[in-house]
Length: 354
Image (cartoon, rainbow, N blue to C red; front, top):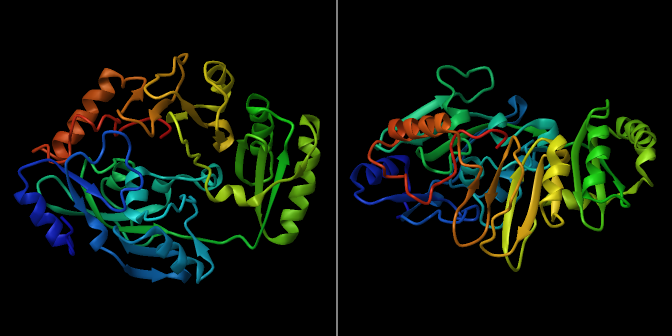
């Protein structure tokens, strides 16, 4: 099913008798998702309002992400949360997944840039929440709730964002001699100083990577100061600035896992895992590959782990009973007929550090 208008979406949901799986480009589906009849929203495309001077963009959910980025770049602007631009990705899929890149350590997540939305709930009702400008946000903050809900509370149809200027200058510093565990201390040191770091990651073969952005003079001053601060951790070199465009690793064999934690917990988690494929968010995000079907045996920690690729869905740890009841209540309120809910949709809607 490929509706062309918001009302078409509402009508299809009202008359649906079987589970539906809202999708855009289908590029961010996790194991077990997309099992119902697919409701393809890619027909709801196009920019409906763009005011560069007000840093405001309103766009239909089925619009290709690369088209959104092209429109913004023409005005010297960007989405500050830096979503990875995988081919075929739609802006609605970005919001449904709360997809946020390396700049999250500075600018926040996708949900923090989202100021309003329109969606269709499980009863086929069209709902609007938030506004089209940053000062006009009233009522219940459903905007934050829908971001990251992965299509289980409703079908996104229109989204409003605050945008940001593209920094005129950027520099990436590298400490190539550090392993993943050693890198976290260096990344923490950079993030807790007055350097306005916009990226803090680790990659095999490249070591710790720290990005600073802004006006050329400011970047130069902060670069020298940051190099001095990082000198005790090892040799500081120029890093590959191209690495920030896509920090999500690909695996040819096995399952890819995404683990969210507090940086202070990284050492304990890494001790229970094989060498990671990448660290991001100053160590708060771990990417690791495991043999197909294997479940990591992790110590107790404050975040969660999700199987990103593989045959079956799994989230660790299981949600607390109170959180599970809240999730069930949310689904019942937004989707009383169970049109979007399925056994495969196991990721809790309410999740710490997601």
